[in-house]
Structure formats: C-alpha cells, structure tokens
Length: 387
Image (cartoon, rainbow, N blue to C red; front, side):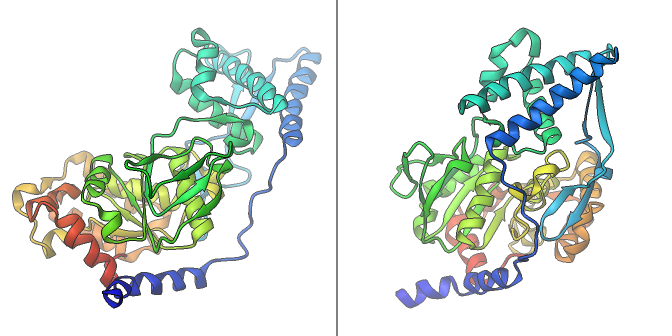
C-alpha cells in the first residue's frame, strides 16, 4: 500500500525537482520598507503639494497608468511587471473631471499616514465607512488604495490597509497568524478563510506534495465533500472563488515561496477559467506594479483541458457553445505576451476555438458522480497530465 502511495507522487516529485532547478536566483526582489520610509514617501507627496501651492499653482498628483498593456512587460521569471517610465495618470485639483478623485486620494493618504504612524491597521471597508458621503462606493476606495500603493511604490499591506479575504484553504497546512493564533487547516472540519494579513503569517508547517488552485467555490466544496485531501494526502487546496482577490494571490505566492512544491490550476475549460489561471501565474495589468509578490510563474494547468473533453468523451449535452464574447476573450488571451512561451497552452486554446465549445469542471460528473475526485484528478497527478 505504501509503495502504491509513493508511486502516486513520482511525477509530481519529478516536477518539483525540475522547478527547483529552474528557479532564477538573479530575480531582483523588491526592497523591504519600514514604517519610517512609508511615512517619508507620504510626506514627500504632501510637501510637493505645498510647494506647488506656494507658487500659486494647483496641486497635481501623478502615478503610473494601471490600465494600459503598453505599461507592462513580460518576464518569464516574474510575470507581467510594470515598466519604469510608464505612461502616467494625472489627477488635477483644479479640474472638474478629477477634483473628486483628488479629494479621495488626499483623504485616504491622511488615513494611511495615521495608521502607519500609530502602527494600527484598518480594512478597506473601515476606510469607506470613514466618509461614505465622500467616497460614494466601496469600489472607489478599493481603486484609490491601489493607486496610492502604485504611486508610493509600496505594497498595500505596508500601508496598513487590509482587505477581507474571499478565498478559502484546506489540507495539510498549519501556520501562525500575526496575532499568535495557530491555524490548522487539517484539523478543521471546514475550509479555513485565507488570512486578511498574509504577510503576517509565519511558522508554516506542511507535508504537502502539491497545491491545487480551484477556480470555483462549488468545485472546491465538492472536493472537500469527496474527501479529496484525504484521498491524495498530503496536499493543500485553495480557492479564490472566481477571479482571485489579492489575499488569495498572496497566499498562493506564500505557499510557493515557503514550500517550493508544484502548484496546479483546476479551472473550467473556457476563456474565463483560463484568464483566472493566468492571473495566478502571470498577474494582471492593474496590479503589475506588485508582480514580485503576487505571481507564481511555476503554476501548471492541470485541467479541465479542452483536449480532455474529447479524450474522456464528455457527453455532448454537457458542452456549451462559445459565445461571441468567449471568442473575443480567447483571441485577446492568445495575443497576450506570456502565451508565446506556452505553445501547449496555445494548442489547447486553438482546439477550443476550433471546436467552438466550452465546458465546466462539473461536466465530468455526467461520466460518474465522483469522477473528478476519484478518477480524473488522481490519474492526472499520477501520470503527469498537466501542461
């Protein structure tokens, strides 16, 4: 029985050795900033405004444009990262179109300054309720905090601003939260929420052979119900419940940096699922200024592959025709710079476009109710069925 168990992980162990061999040690790591440096950067912004006012000119805030592909470059060891000398967004205090955003930034800068100075933390939700009339919506606060992070070149957690996590974890993993709370995912009867302060996590302990990122919460819960983590123990599962929040991405990166074990993505065989996988692996344009902390270029595509649909003869009534929007998204993905380094991914995406169908992971249940956890994933992991 022990021999069979060991054979289950032969290909995974081979992949782990390969990944460790290919780790680039010369990747420049971002500098670690202390509170004094963060305060100084905020003070410099305010001093710049004062200097401008002293000249009878309207203050202006400038930060890199976080929505333009022209501002990012692709590095296979890092993912999408913001270029130096990127085009910028200018927020003027004397322009009716931008004066409200100027006020938002100025207000949140003052809140952040007090948080860092007092070594206290607040959630983005707390900041929104600090002045709901001024901000208008939670989304406004979320965007401005990221703009400030980009402008100051400071990770959000260093600004002492936290966000409520939407992701969950389970499996062979335990760690200490910053406040000293011991989290044991293995002994928990349910999935554990991803920490809202991933940077504060320490003393991670795990015997896991691999990590699986699960796109959807429904699939994640089904795998828990099927005792997947016990069947293929030891392993760790994590879900960002769709498009991942920053904390889920930080946690995946933390697991890679700490455990150095293979990380696999289990997503729907559709453009939406592929894009989510690419965010974990290569990052996003909007957060490219923090790529070093958020991306894991070693992530492998485990499933659901478009070629699996034919190979496993998934019933036709479980296949969904691609919409025009799907085809547009697929075309957009294929033009992204990182796809040039993934010919096997391109081949799968071309197959999807050629067959004009997509499928959800749940479609495998049409073959057998527990096919995903009892057949599909164990075989994929045992025989190296990832790309």
